[in-house]
Amino acid sequence: MPETPLYSINPDRNKPWNGLPDLPIHPDLYRTVAIYERLAEAKETLGRLQGRSIAIPNQGLLVNSISLQEAKASSAIENIFTTDDELYRAFSQQPGEFTSEPTKEVLRYREALWKGFHYLEQQGGFSLAYFVQVFQEIKQTPEGVRPNFSSVYIRQGGSGPNAGKPVYTPPRGEGILEAKLSNLVDFLNDDRAYPLDPLLKMAIGHYQFEAIHPFRDGNGRTGRVANIHVLTQKGLLNYPILYLSRYIVEHKQGYYSALAGVSQRGDWSGWLSYMLSAVTQTAQLTYEKINRIVEARDAILDVIASQTTVRRPDQLTQKIFFQPVTRVRHLTEDRTYAENTARDYLNRLVELGILERSVVGGNHYYLNRELYSILAE
Image 1 (cartoon, helix red, strand yellow):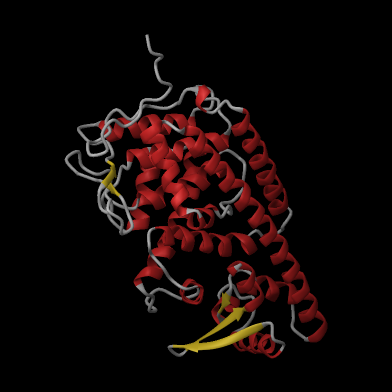
Image 2: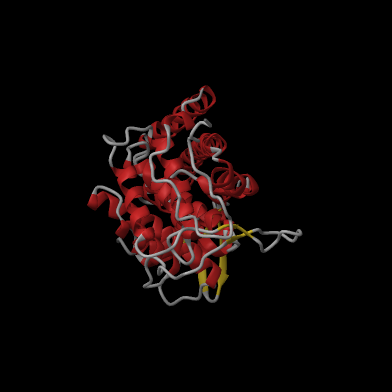
C-alpha cells in the first residue's frame, strides 16, 4: 500500500485549487538538517541587524529611506518602475504637486507598509481586515476579497512557447477564500497551537497567501508587506527595515520557481531555502547600509559643526538624513529654523558639497548625495 504523501499537490493547473491544504504543514517537510542550518544563519544575521538598529537614537534615519527602497523594489517585481530621483522628490512633495502614476504606486506601497504596521500595533495580531486594508491602500480601491465567481489565473511569463498559459489557478467558490484566509490568520497569530520559528512561519505564511490569491490584483505586493510585518509582530525587528524585495528582484525566476515547486511537487524545502537565503542576504545588506549611513551622518556632522556657524548642527544633520531629498519646509514645519535661516543653511551645505541643489517646476530640492549613493548600492 503506497504511503500517504506529506503534502497534497495541485492536480490540474487549469482548475481552481480548492484542495489547497490548510496550515500547518507536516513537520517533516521542514525538519531537515539543511533547513535548520539555513534557519540558524538567517536568525543570526537578522539578530545582528536588530541589535544594530536599536542602538541608533533616531530610527527615522533608517526607516524612511529603507522603506522607500523596499517599496520601489517590491513594485518593480510587478513591472512598476520609477527612478530614485523621481521617487525621492515625490516623497518630499506636498499634496497636489505633480507625481507620475508609477511613482504614486510606489509611494502607496510604502504607505501600506506603515498602515499595516500601525494596525498590528493597535490590534495585536493579523486578521482578514489587516490584509484587506493593506491591499486597499496599495491599489487605492474599495474592493475586498474577490467574489466567488472571479476567475484568476497565474500565467507563464516571457515569450516562449508556454507564454500566457496558466501555471496555477487559485481557489475560488462560496466561502472558500474566507475559510482559507481564516486558517492563515490563525496560523500566523496562534503560537501555542502552531509553535514554529517566526522565520519559518513567515515563509510558510507567504506561500499560503500567494496560493490563496484572495484579491483580483495586488496579491504579490500585499504578501510582501505581510512578510515584513510577521517579523515585526513576532519581535524579530522593531521596525520594518528588512529589504526583502531587492533579493526577490535579483532572483525573480527563483522566486516563482520555488512557489511553483510547492504547488506542483510539494517541494517545501526549496521554497523555505529560498526565503531563508533572502532573509540572510538582505539582513546582511541592510546591516551594512545602516553602518554606512551612520558613518556618513557622523562625518557630515563633524564638517557642519567645524566649518560653519550653523546653530544646532546636530538637528540640521538629522534633517538631511531623514530622507534623501530635503526642502526648506522640512526645516520650518516643526519650527527647527525660520524660513530664511533654513534656506541659508541648506545653501551653505551646497557650497560645502554636502548637498546638491536642483530646481524642478520652480521647486528647490536639496539632495544628500552621500545618503543617495549608499541607498542606491
